[in-house]
Structures are given as C-alpha cells and as structure tokens.
Amino acid sequence: MPLYSMTGFARVQVRVPGRDEAVEQSQLGYTLTVKSVNHRFLDIQLRLPSGLDELEMELRRALKENLVRGHVELMLAVDRSTQITGGYNRELVANYIAAFSTARADHALTGQPDLNTILRLPGALQPDGRSNADEDLGAITESVKREIGPLLNQLKIMRAREGDSLEAILNASLDRLEEAVAGVAQLRPEVEQRYQERLTQRLTTAVGNEFNRQRLLEEVAVLVDRSDVAEELARMNTHIGHFRELLSGGGEVGKKLDFLLQEMNREANTLLSKTGGVGGKGTKITELGLAMKAEIEKAREQIQNVE
Image 1: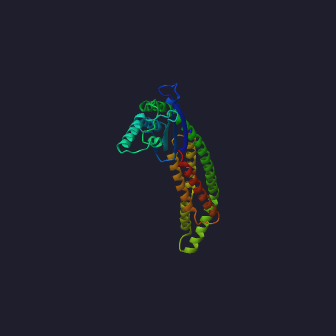
Image 2: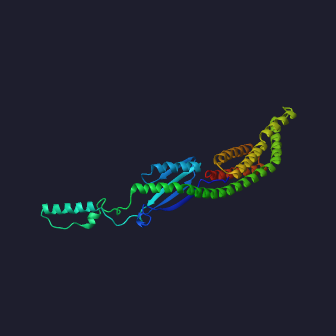
Image 3: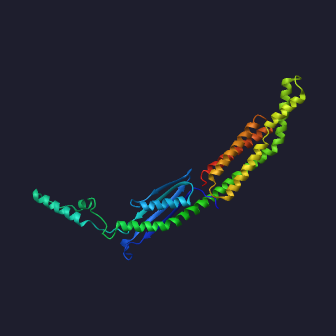
C-alpha cells in the first residue's frame, strides 16, 4: 500500500445531454473539482448549487469511503452557457409596455418606453423555454454520481505521488539521524572514561582521605552509569527501524509516525541532559544531539502532511 500525502487535486469537465440531444441549446455542462490539504481529521466542505441535497449525501459518503484525513473541498460548477438563447419574458415586457401606455394616456404625457430599461427589469431576460430546471438537476445528479469514483481515483493517484516524495524526504532524514546516533555511539566510551576520570579527581580533591577510596570509586561508577546514554541510543535505533517499517508499509500511518517522532525527540533530550557539561568529546556529542533534534523537527514538519 502506498504512502499517501494529504495534498492533492483533481478535476473533470462533463457535458450532460438534455432532453433533445440533437439540439445544442438543450445541453448542460459542469465542472467537478476536488482538492485536499493537510488536517488532523477528515474535514469535508462541499460547494454545490442549490437543490442537490440528495447528491450532497452521496458525495459525502464517497469521500468518507475513499479518504481518511485531510481538509477536502469539493466544488460543482454548472455551466448553462450553451443552453441559454436570447429569449425574453414576453408577458412581463408586454405588461410593462401596456402599463406605460396607460400611464401616458392618463396623465396626458408624451414619450416612448425605453427597451434597454425594460430588459433590465428582473426576469425580463430568460432562456427561450427549452430548459427544465428539475430535469437539469436530475441529469446532473446522475452524471456526477458516475464521475465521482474516477475523480477520487485521480485524487488518490496524485496523493500517492506526493506520498512517494514525502517518503524519500523522510528516509533521507532518517539516514542523517542514524549517522548522528552512530557518531554518539562511537564517542560514548571515550566520553564515559573522560567523565569518570574528571569525577574521580574532583571528588578526591573534595573529600581528601576522609572516605574509603573503594567506596568513592563505587559512588563514581554509579554516577557514571546514570550518565550513560547506551539505552537512549538503543531506543533511538529501535524507533528509527520502526519508523522505516511504517513508511515502507504505507497506508494510514501519519499519526503513528508523529508519535514515534515525539519519542525520538524525548530520547534526544535525555541524551543532551546526560552529556551536558562533560567537555572535550562531550561537546561533539552535544552537537550530534542537537543535530538529531533538528532532523526530528524537519521530519515532523513533513509528517503533518501524511495521511
């Protein structure tokens, strides 16, 4: 199963035949567009012409069946430009002219009605009468129901392509993270020895001969053990391996990956707290720990767009 991004876009333009397929004016057209961006949950927003309540329910069902997360916006724009001819409302215009003539005669006025003014009246201009709104909506509804499946497949293909790019970016971050972990593991024995020597020297200077030297060394060993980062490095490698498995498996892994990155960040913070102030090679470990945190943060930014 591929890794899906939540970013995608798809569009289809369709012409719907009307009642008389031989008459071009009786044909409808529409554009169905769907686009998605990242979101914590599946957030659906539909923009449809009025009167398509049944279609809205069908579209919501189809989106929920095909998508898991993301802010999804679906728009249906109906184009009746090929349907409309230069018709007008004969009854409305005739009534206006009759009223004009009556008012002119009643008040002994002169003048002629202005056609431009008449045609600007609400409802004066209209289609030539061939269209039927209910039939148009019915035809559009049935057509959209047929087109929504292929359209969502287009969207998923684009989201999968974006997911491939995200997978490559995330694997590159994991490579750099593994390099930093390996660098800390290589420096760890020398830093640990250095820390033990410095701690022994300081405690010996502080207590002199007041305590048994063997007991002193035992206490030093305990402190050194508490500052050891072996467990943090082991857990970090485990998290990285699990992360790669989830990436290669694909599917709905965005939330799981985000949780793993939180765990990695916790291990990096613990590593830094344990190795701070050692000096010498310990400074290099601090640099590597900060590099880990930087890579983890970069990965978290990318993960926000994984389904």
